[in-house]
Amino acid sequence: MSVRDYRFTDLDNKPTLVQEIVRLEERLHKETGEKVTLIAYSPSNGADPLGEEACRAGLND
Image (cartoon, rainbow, N blue to C red; front, side, top):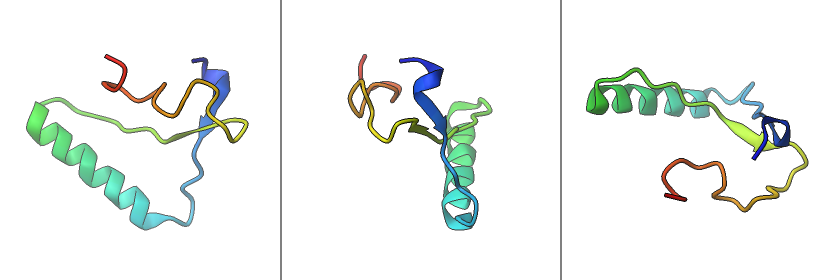
């Protein structure tokens, strides 16, 4: 996986999704004791060249 393969997901005008991400960051902070920042990425070309789990932490371990 390369950073070039992905772009930031456009969450403009999607406040409900942003709020859900913030709530999950807060929950992760509470449960782990560490500050967590979740970042939404989408494949640059519309298709994930490495399979849909390639950039999802913990799924390939």
